[in-house]
Length: 327
Figure 1: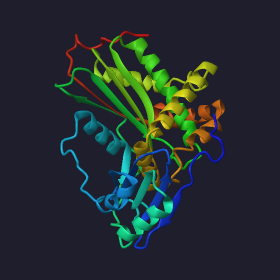
Figure 2 (figure 1 turned 180 degrees about the vertical axis):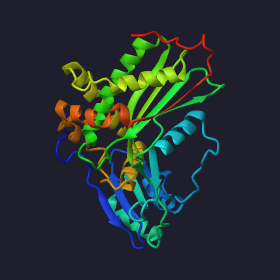
Figure 3 (figure 1 turned 90 degrees about the vertical axis):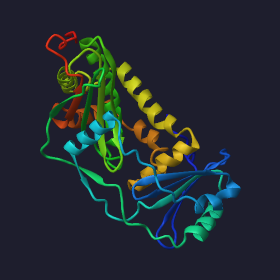
Figure 4 (figure 1 turned 60 degrees about the vertical axis):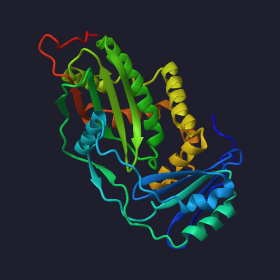
């Protein structure tokens, strides 16, 4: 379902004196202006009506709050990414930007931004880029006495959004998630959830998650790798192909339904070096992908040996292990 030509509103993209990049996405139907300032790798948000744009701009730079105590799942995810990827400093350049989306006229926004932020000098700090590690621990098991179920997280490299294979990998991840859910459901009566998605922030990676009641973490981790290694889903049936396309369209288009989400997503795209309209025009890229492209993407990126895995759960005694049922 390609969008009609010209359906995406024109983008104003300029560099202000001092170095700040200004991107304006007019949205006449909106009643507010959503502003996103990307500084030092964090997106600072503000909302204003069009006649309060000046105040919005002048008040944008505020400290971003950070939770000093991440949740257990977040700690696992950070450890997993640190195991599978090396974090590299980002080269100073184009990541300091102000993005405005909503009912604002481009020339007025440019004039206001130049008046308030024309002397802004970029800080020179960026969120890191990720590079795959050649050596990593394939599977790590963590006992968590406070957990009530087993959790498995897995990560593997994926092509970045600027790569021509990115759209095919999005569809491959959708197919892999459905296959993973089917396979784990047949193995474990206590399957709570299973998913495979492509994450993108300072890089791109395949993110797999599964939660299972009444099963050992090591057992679930092995099952997840088994299902990812299966190849029967690499060549999708017509029904699976349509379901994957529908799911991928929903995840990329519905997320942009609101002005605020559009502003945040487009700001992060620009911070990652992509065109401001990359995500709104992604459906057009997805329309060009055929099943053969997805099969090739699955065979390249979704292999057993691509993933690092971290699994956690309550330490079960010998009798508590093996509550999953075999296929």
